[in-house]
Image: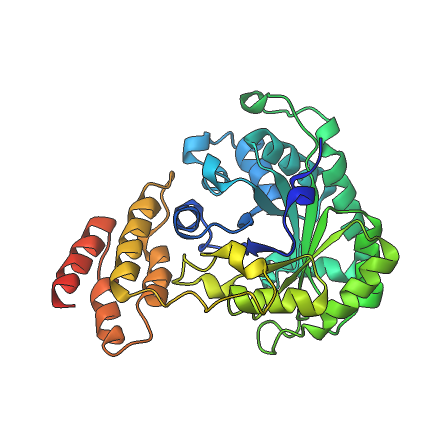
Length: 351
């Protein structure tokens, strides 16, 4: 069966996996207001999925890791991102992801969080290319084995495997790092165009994407390349794809407070002469309404997340205008969706 990756338009635009941001509630807004070509989940620990499901036997309705892998039919194609340094855990999680009905699985090999790196996962894998390749193979071969959890015994299909990583650890090392990944033949590789050492302190270097495309074309032209880092919007994404030659672009921080980011996506695949004006800025009234929808969706997550997690969205939706700080302070006092929506309704009267 042909992978969904081969059916995507060029260039394609994807939403980035972001912890406590791209959960099912926020992805619901994306589907309604401007769906990307490919959607990623938050990243989930493969080790955690095994231990909560197979060792602790936590029911799905009470398992926060299974919650983070819940999605709606409208989100297809959707990719689940997992992380681990253990091939057997990657295989287990990949099988589970396939059983849950995802279109693909993505291996995180770029997260700079120290707790992830202590597990020899995330960005730590850039320093261990052979092991990274072994993890890719474990995911690719996982579909051949049976799933030990009887709750998910349905017909397995081969799960396309992709990787999200960085251009190097302490310094750029594409010449050494990228060929190892390409030779392992993932369906796609997303490159965050910074090193692990740079974190987000330096600008993303999109000139390196041209280098990556050149290496890809030489080593394994079948693998799709996705660029990521400092992409301001769809027009910027299209221009970066056109200039670098990458197949797709992933947008992350530009999503904050802007579920309309992928609105009008088809128009941004045209040439620069054909693209019209950028989508107009959405009014505060629309942003407040979307924030209320997000709050309702957030509280419907099962098991629930702490409501404070939603407050980063309040800051993102309510900013950039006179009086924004006072409005945010009022909304931040809310402790549940009903309180937040009541506060929003009270503020609307004054708009």
